[in-house]
Image (cartoon, rainbow, N blue to C red):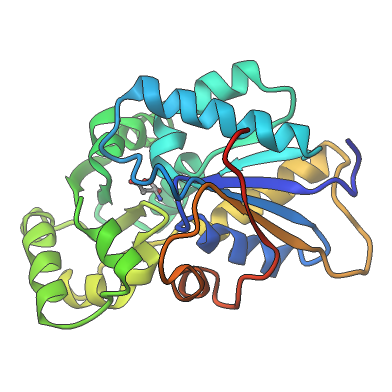
Length: 267
Ligand code: DGL
């Protein structure tokens, strides 16, 4: 492993490509290996044991591919498996919860932050822990939005049905007068427009992708592992299944087309 080794990034599916996009923008010379567990998505309704098992398997695969850091680009896996991975894995591991929590604390004015995520992330209390570690006076209101992941995967990003679902999830948070809303799932940035329509005016949405990229940059810099070369890094994607409309959905998350995709079954 050296400074030219790739950054490993994984998610339950394709949502983590929103983090890849932010990494590519901030660190263009870094090569990235992305692993999307498309055969087993969603993680958000699975048990902690299974999420740890899947995350550990994927981390093992990434390490075999000589990554210099693992970015857990999934809030659910960050909430439930990050501690285990950090203990067991031989390279640094970076999650998405602390960067998102830190950003939200920076921008909230009324100190009332909302967080939306999968059932597993909400039930884990991971965002509350991360926020209280920094500022105990903040009020946090959370809401699980289980239908948002399939909507994002299906490309249902606007229209009456989506607006109604979003209103159903977000009205309780609006009533509590949050002024900042953490998008606590890497799929949710795709639904930003609908979410903006359904939250109180002036509510600031926190998409942690950029904050995650900045944290990875800082970690690599401290470890002297930043790739300072001038060549553009490569993106290689591994998935556990190529679902129907994979290209379209992948492009939606990454913002550009997905080349170099390989399927892995045993890892
Ligand atoms: N992208 C995952 C996250 O950030 C959610 C999708 C899932 O339920 O697997 O939590």
